[in-house]
Length: 238
Image (cartoon, rainbow, N blue to C red; front, side):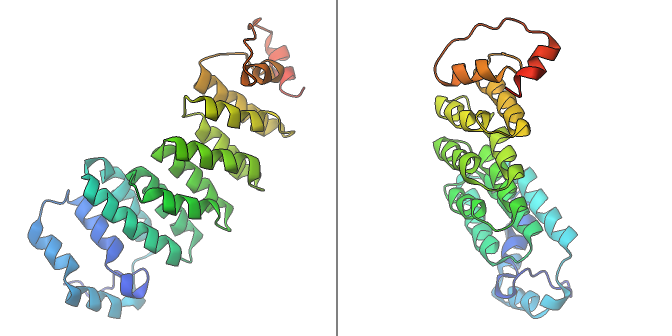
């Protein structure tokens, strides 16, 4: 029995540790699983909260979950996603909130969108950026809708850049329309990121000719004219 507490938030002390240990072990040891979830042991960990794990240890636990997520059953992914949602809402550290959000997306559980939506409304831009990555990992129409909202509505440029990059993973007309919002933005960095994502989504290549890409987004079929490198970069600022 370890004498050092393994708690993040008092009464929830064993929740995340349980997930990390089960995932690291592949869920193959029933006796050890029972020892971990034993209420008496959980109370002992909670009582030792002041000796809790370091930030590094907690981040390592979350990384372990992400690496193991692909081997989990659907039931286990749902269970861990629900646990992470509870931890996210109580966690004061934006660094840990961001790591929880990234892990939630990788789990691809039915419960994941609840956490990811909350993360996109987080007061810390770093957490909202993590939410963009999480939505990209989760995939599906809900992800495109959420990322589109971030592109058009977030006030932080880095978040909008992250959402624009994430949309490049969706070969969907809705994603193309959302990238058109970034393409019409006055910020050159966001325009460039939109071009990069549109290239991935569409399989087309109009260089950095924003005018041609805008035509494509509107449903046109511009013909690439193989501009010079200087012309391609110059088109970005039109």
